Structure formats: structure tokens, C-alpha cells
Image 1 (tube, rainbow, N blue to C red):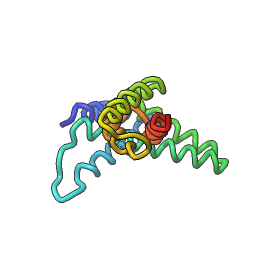
Image 2: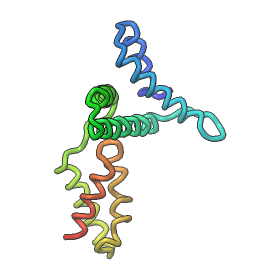
Image 3: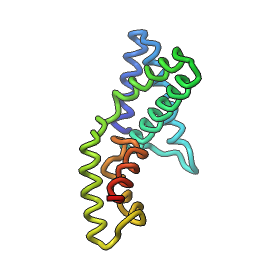
Image 4: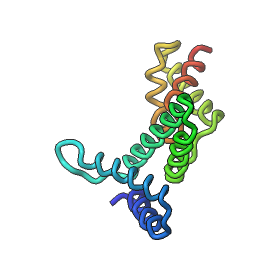
Length: 154
């Protein structure tokens, strides 16, 4: 079993013992999403830590989007609940990259791609192919894409 999934289950057990209802509910939802991912497809399989991290990232993104939607709909109590769940999930995610770190990674990838002869907006796919594995789970894809576009425009 993946170490991250073991950690989630251990934390769920301790949250149940300590009667932390919000933590318990959030961890149950996350573990359910992991289990759904494991049994999807033709054959059930065990997820690696990287795949569990992808599920956690997806769940965190859902909470961010829901919180934004609730804020826009003038439902601050529901937005607060989503943000609380996001904070619980964020404990298991790696630290996010700063804008400077993303810019450095993008600049290095742009330099590599332009050295290979591709320039301008048509090089976006090649740059993203290099950048995505380096920032996976640590930066928002939209933010990275915007940074790549800006770097290629210069």
C-alpha cells in the first residue's frame, strides 16, 4: 500500500478517536476518491504515492472551485466549509512553488526549446511538456500556462 494512503488512513483513525468531525469527513471523502480511482478501469489496482498525490491535487482543486462558486453566490458559510476542507487536504500536498520558482523553471525550459529551434507561441506545447513534470502537484496548471505564454511572448 502507498505510504501516503497509509498516512491518510492512520490520520483518519486518530481523527475518529479525537472526534474531529470535519477532519474525519474530509479524510473519508479523500479516501473514497482514492478507492474509486483504484477500482476504475478494467482491473482493480493499488495506486502509487504519485497517483494518490494526483487524486489529492484534484480534490483540492474541487474545493477551491467550490469555495469560489459559493463566494460568488453570496454563501460565505458554505465557502468557509470548503476552505476548511481544502486546508485539511493541503496538509498532504507538497509545498506550492512560488512565482519566482515557476519563472525559473519556465525560463530554463524556454531556453532549451528555443535552442532546439522552436520559437514563439508554437513552442508552447514543447515547453509545457518539459515544465509539467517538474511542477506536477506543486503549481496550478493555469498559472504555469500563463507564465509559459508570457515567456514565449518576449
